[in-house]
Amino acid sequence: MSGFARARVEKLIREAGAFRVSAGAIDRLNEVLTDYGANLAKYSVEIARHNKRKTVKESDVKLAATK
Amino acid sequence: MSGFARARVEKLIREAGAFRVSAGAIDRLNEVLTDYGANLAKYSVEIARHNKRKTVKESDVKLAATK
Image (tube, rainbow over all chains, first blue to last red; front, side):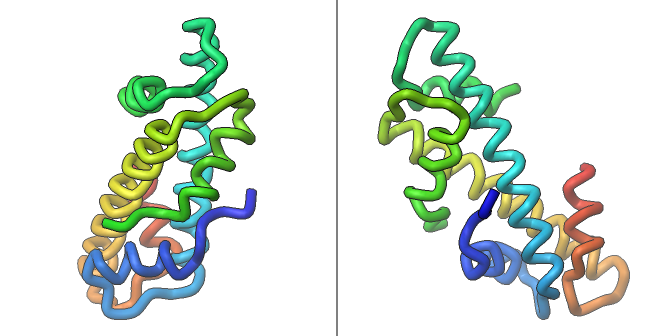
């Protein structure tokens, strides 16, 4: 999994008030977010299938995120 | 919060096996991931401060993600 743009992930940590951010911290947060996103995506697809739909809709992601 | 690249978020849902993905599903997943990332980042910064460090390290993010 390639993950998100490093600059965007770094910005999240800087906006949270960080004075300095290590490269490892950025990579780790990127990994955590990518894994979480992949899991939510999988669950969203399962929910759409369960509803016999081929299209993943916003409400599927919304429901998946409440898990 | 501007969020992550839409194409990357869409890819996560496609890689999860989606046949079609609505625009709303992409935006919602982006929002959920951005919020989650901002929360993890805030907690990581708090953990670094608690350790009297100015640099947010990988171990801070790792600990934050276990919350």
